[in-house]
Image 1 (cartoon, rainbow, N blue to C red):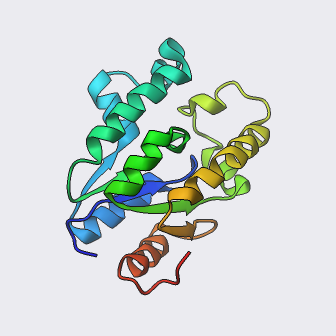
Image 2: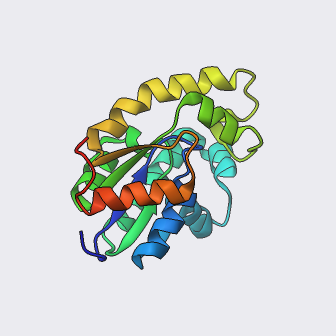
Length: 177
């Protein structure tokens, strides 16, 4: 795979999409974009505020518009929001415009990585975080798998190790999914 191709990182919250994406982009000489950060930069407000004002449906509409625009760029590593795959059009454009890497994280790993996060609207004021994460995983895992060119398990693994495994997949030396 050449340096100008797009790489899209999908997966649940806490999978490491932003951290891995930054390192992968730097290594490959590509631009890194986080779709959630891009939405915040354009609207001037954070994601929890959008959820509060517009609900999840309003946020998902903004997210779809952003993804449709971003996938048309060349030479990017894009970290998507965990729920981006809920929209069939998002899945279609991601699959059609780049190499899709599913960063798979167990519910235990997600719990650990989001334990101190207060910027996760779907976990805000939730008493049963494990239950919410388990439900989201059950709903979204098949959708991540549907469009993934490569699936990488993130549990207990460093960003450096994950980037190396993705690089192997991009170069065609990783086993097929």
